[in-house]
Length: 280
Ligand code: AMP
Ligand code: ZN
Ligand code: FE
Ligand code: FE
Image: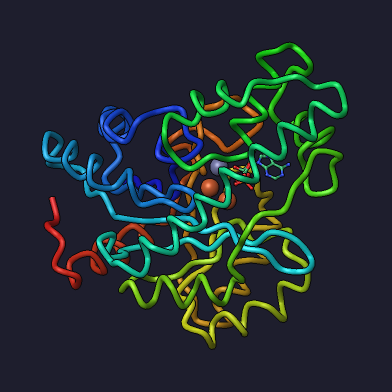
């Protein structure tokens, strides 16, 4: 059994459409995937529709909500969410609207420091989905100012960069609550670099968090070991995935490239069963 529980599509800052992701996952022989776009569930209906042609593949509805804490960004994943939930959709829409305004302001700040990119081009790259800094980074690379997306974050648009602008964000606890209210299971995404992680995890657990991403593409065996211990200590499901974006090799990894323990895949399948999803 093979799975990838962290994938981005054109509904946010991924290269492939939901249909293409489903086709690709099936070609790669994956059994379970989850579509986890930033602040959007719009990729889920087309992914589920496409999955009808690949009956051996289970597609779990997911979302990744980018939240803020004083020490930095924290991403909360939600699995098995009711993607029709009105409150969830309303909140995600607000988050996406604030990204639009923030993006425009960042273009103006970039112009102030001599980096001229077109807002129209950023919108084109975002293809109507959640606008993210990776789209802005792509537009900067296209203009030849720099050669990788990571460089855009390092030089201009990272949290401490000269063209960074804040936007409306939920707190991690708000995101956990929003996901729970939409019938989902909240997971803490790529947690290794979160400040005071050991103190933070029990707070999230108390709020209803179900799991922790342990198996991430760029994590060393010792990082994975430390996170396994933490997950076990707080009785959290140890999950993982590639965080595939397909933009360039500095963000995320390839679909299906992170090996997940068979018991995790089994756990997700039985969770899906309990939620009445059709299991291939
Ligand atoms: P945004 O959602 O607009 O805040 O952009 C953040 C997204 O950019 C993250 O979810 C990552 O996919 C990507 N990213 C890539 N490199 C970095 C970096 N150095 N710092 C922050 N985000 C990054
Ligand atoms: Zn992203
Ligand atoms: Fe993330
Ligand atoms: Fe992600």
